[in-house]
Structure formats: structure tokens, C-alpha cells
Image (cartoon, rainbow, N blue to C red):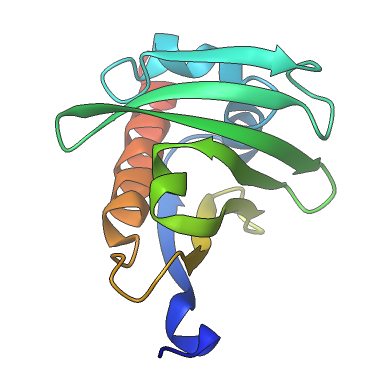
Length: 155
């Protein structure tokens, strides 16, 4: 039988930003409702289920496209304006078919010269040892963030 250490993990990535770090943070945070307009090919819709777009603990339903397949994700969001960190805890959706716990974190860092980066991670606990490591989700998040960054620098 597998120990919990074989089931629990964390994947991480980082993206150098070409867009304004503050604008990027607000786009993934309190202005997430704009994502379908900016990157519709990745996120066709986000609907508010409970609360509002900025209040911690609000619940949102995401519809996204991964590997050519439409999936859904219901999350409870936390924002930290001071550290420019957004945390999304899955409470339902396709990823919960494989993971007992699934939390996505994105932290925007601003450098002294005004440039920035976003560090993102997926913390997870597999339902059992046969479930895949969520590498495809981390890769999707990286591509989505890159597409968002590119859409924010378009004239």
C-alpha cells in the first residue's frame, strides 16, 4: 500500500512577464471575469457561483479547454494584495476525479526595474497511487498565463 508521501506533491513553474505586473495580478485576481474575453480559446467562461469577483472565499465555476477537451473547475479563491498572490482551491470539477486536494497558487513578483514574473504551482493529493501527477494541468496553467500576458501587451 502506498504511503501518503507517494500521493502528495507540488509542481512549480515560472513565467517572465512582458505585461505590467500589477495589471497581470489584477487580471488573474479580482478581474478574472475578463479572462474569457482575453483568452477565450483557453477559458470560454467563468461564472460567479457565490460571493463576488474580489472577496476572499468567493466561489467561481470555470470552463476551460485542455488537450482539446472541455473541462470544468469549481474553486474557492483567496487573494493577497500585499504579496500579489492568488490561491484557488478546487472544490469540484474534473480534476477532483483524480485528486483529493488540488490547489493552484500564482504569485506575481515585481522587480526593481518594473519588470515582473509570475511563479505558479499546483499542490495536490492523489486519490490513489494509480492517478497521474497533474503535469498536464501545470503545463496548461503555464500556457494560459503566457497567453494572458501576451493579450495584455497587445495595443
